[in-house]
Image (tube, one colour):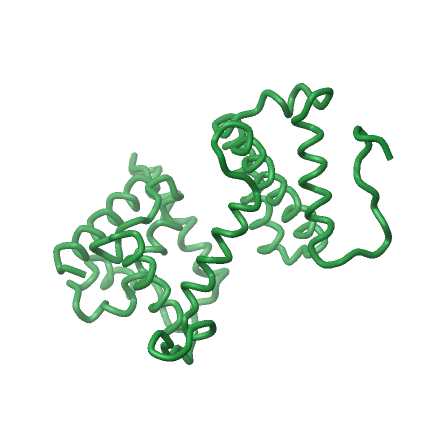
Length: 234
């Protein structure tokens, strides 16, 4: 094998070995004599691909297409390796730093699994684990509220879901949701997920007929809820 050849691809390998091959392939693509398109890319130029691949992976999950999911996860992984390779050329960190960072985070955020002695905590349910995760994250990031740190660029429905999820444990200490009575009226018992989808679609359609943007309206409502959470000191 010459220096320019891709790494071998044996039928069997140790766990993680294929990841090293992916790193080697990316090194060749970005290196001298590699691919002009890959060589010219930047963090900014790859943003659209990162978003697109993530959404395609989501679609595969939602359609229960596990074969397609395997492919899409590979495309998402490529974006991670691509960005890490770009960073290694000018920013002083690489794929190993990315991996080390997430290893450290997972260990730190799971004290109920990895900590012992005085540092150990109890988290016997998924809800306790999630609450502890958010508390540790807020402390690490120096955040004053559970509503802080939610990316503003998230789609409105996902952003609203994040605020609801993070505030679920303190809902009894917050003002009632202004839209709750109307939502209860139009969401009878026994509503299925398909029914909910149809209802949301109808709301979007009606909003358009009334000259309103459902996306921006939901963003505004989410901001109001986040402001209420902060005002309550939570």
